[in-house]
Image (cartoon, rainbow, N blue to C red; front, side, top):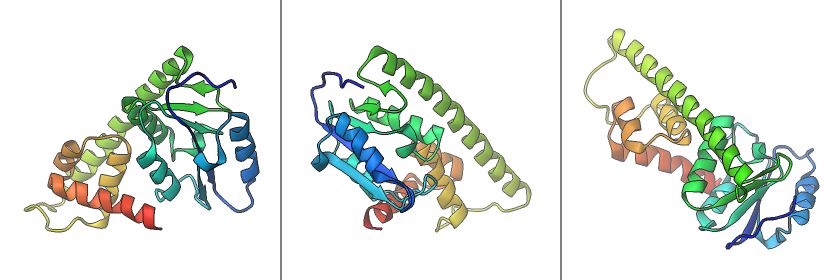
Amino acid sequence: MKPSTTTGHLLGYIRVSTGKQDEQLQHDALDQASVLKRNRYVDHGISGAKTERPALDALLADVATGDVITVYKLDRIGRSTAHVASLLEELTQRGVHIRSLSDGLDSTTPTGKAMLQMLAIFAELERSFIQERTMAGLAAARAQGRVGGRPKKVNDAKHRQAQTLRDAGESVPDIAKTLGVSVATVYRVTKSAREQARTS
C-alpha cells in the first residue's frame, strides 16, 4: 500500500501473542510501509484478550495530531471489534490517522474514512449491548436485596465492569452513574489498570 501524504510521523505497532508467531512478518510489512524501526512499538507474548499492553499504552501516550499509526492487521491493535472501533474513534478525534496494511484501511483517504464511520456504528451498538447487560445485572442484584449506600470499595465485579465500559468508550460520568459509584472511583480503578499495564 502506498503511503499517503501526511503532516506527522509514521509510527508502527506490532503485537505477537506467542513465541511461535513470526514477528518478522509484521516488521517486513512495516518496512514496506516506510516505518522506521526506531518508531515501532512492540508487545511480546500478549494475547488478544489481555488488557495489559505496555507498548500500545506507550504508543497512545506518544502519538500526536497528524501522526499515522501503521499496523499489519487491525486485530493486532484491539481485543475485539468494539475495542478496535472505539480506539480508532478516539484516535480520529485526536487527529491521528490509522493504516492497516492487510485490511486495506487508510484513514488518510476518503475510503478509509468511510470504513472508520462504519466501525464507529458497530462500536456504538456494542457499547449499548454492554450497558444493557450491566444494567440488567445491577437490576438483578437489587431484586435480590443487594442494595444500600455507596460502597467504600469497588469489588472485583464492578472493577471489571468499569474497565469494560471504559474500554468500550463510555464516559466516566456515565459509568459512575451506571455502577452507582463516584466519578473519582471510576477514574481511580480504571487508571490503576492502565498503570499496571505500563509497569507489567
